[in-house]
Image 1 (tube, helix red, strand yellow):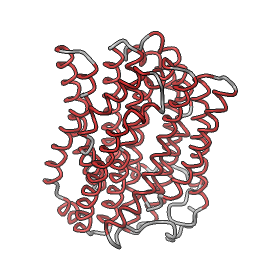
Image 2 (tube, one colour; image 1 turned 60 degrees about the vertical axis):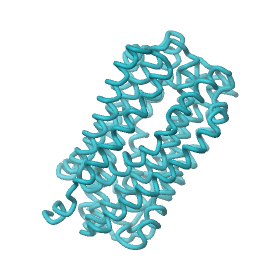
Image 3 (cartoon, one colour; image 1 turned 90 degrees about the vertical axis):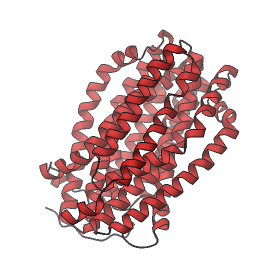
Length: 455
């Protein structure tokens, strides 16, 4: 095995320093990185909506939930890898850290290729199951097949960046996303406006940009002299490390994947309304909504690393104090964002499409959901904190019950009474509220001290 060192020049040691400053310093690059990552599909929608029209915009919107179902599952697995690596980093266990890095990267490559092949094959079945209208299903299938062909590089980037974040390095993943997002924008315009490749050009641009970000992240891991260095000749699957990653990551992956799958069910209700105009409006709302949740998601990721490092260092009190401050900051930020979204809702939707009916429905969906958006801070940050402590099953059960079971029960019964854009649009807030209440109650009963003492 290659020699490894313990240098940490580019990393944030979250076991020391002022808590809120450490969380903010860690979270800001995450927020920026997540913004640029969201720009991939958002720019796709803006280019499609303005150059190819409402039906093409509806087609891209119809693919979002399907893409997220698959990608979110493996993002959950990357959370498991991040917890294992951050704990090793906090406890200064450099040999195990190196093993976890090699296992994570090889796992990402193998599974990414397998999932890509399966996904391309099931695309037509998924679109039909979601009641996608005939005028949308063709271009949606075209987009998805190309997008899923690029899944291996997407997984490789997500796993590589998870490793960097776990050791406190959030700046370089951000830089990679800025580069690849700018490339994606340029290629979108080139392929659609100049070459006339239509919706296929949008998907090809996304895959190329993701490949660039994956190459940059992997090369960074290979060049570092620190304990998380990636050494190609050392690549192997360590069963013990993989078991730990799955113990934490699999519940998170199941939860995130099924939550996104539940969103696909919501999309099927939107599709069932039978209007590409409403679908386009929902697509605009969904893209904007994905940006609104980013502060909570990023602070949740920061809490995962913060808790993992501090529990690795046996500092339970600092871990708990960090969670409290993260929730407080997250709720405050989302309240401000919700107010801004309510004021500028119509202007935000107009970025994607100028059709008056699309503007109406997109604005309507935003205004219906913003009053409940602050709940996401409790959901994301408390779940991230619990995963950082090694408890992934609790957040999984809570989120599955809230976002899948409760949401689908609500939609099933309420649409029997009144099937319209109002009843369907409230499907998201119902899940958020239930999840916030259950997450808070579960967190209050968690026993971190006992777990650390047992270790």
